[in-house]
Image (cartoon, rainbow, N blue to C red; front, side, top):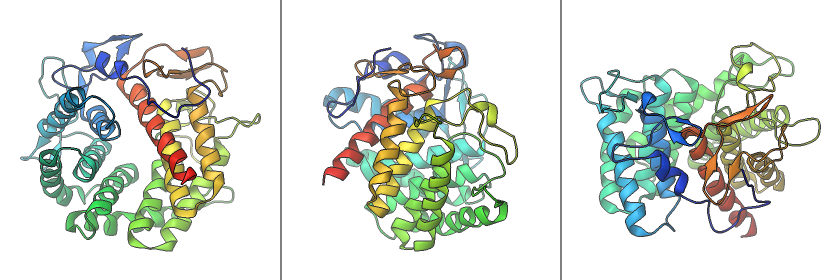
Length: 354
């Protein structure tokens, strides 16, 4: 793929999203560039896609509103009031494959609602998202997964930024932020400053959640813990040559072990950019801008393979970096990671200039 040295304006092309999406939602996977209907849809990706629409206000109104409605409708359909939770997987023919999804998908769905209630261009969509956030937040206080809790915090803090004191969002932050903070002490070992005894996926969301919780609550301890753990993760994700090296999937499940090199996923680079955005907002320190730039450069070729994984013109992104080169499939998670990472990088550069 063709990468650019930098992206400032305009944002990546939107064609990659339209390739994967239809009237139902955005499909999970593709075989190379062709959407793969066998795997259908999931609320994880449609929640991410809904967030993206609020970060792309420059799109033509008809295009923006069409896809914002499609992705919001998927999240609405995913809500199962009988189980007080969100379904995750849907087949290509529109049949739900479960009554309730895993905890992380619950957190991602709530995250998208918090962002939508705070940022949607449409007042009607903001009102819808707030209503469903308020209905879902109470049951989701029972979530036990640290990542699910972090995702909920990210949605809640976005909502609190627009509606200070909002009851359900406040309850989310007050319940989950102290729990995340205590995990670091529980699992600490010499040379290990992390929330779990293992490294897994979307790692940077854990410190990001504490940073954003500290911002809305004024709790300096949350900010300090977020900075400490993000700095530890950033050091682990730095190759000997100095470029960003995402924690590889082969690391998952290995207790107190250094990260494996492969397979590297776009989700990790996106998460690092957005966590650095939160760290820069909290501290104003230039090192977080530099860390974010390094993570973004991973998409454009500054990686272990020396190959561009994303294409700014089309907005496409390969599914990962393997020992033999890119995974040539271009599924929703990867495309959305590049799109959202680019949006965050532009926002961070603007913030730094100000």
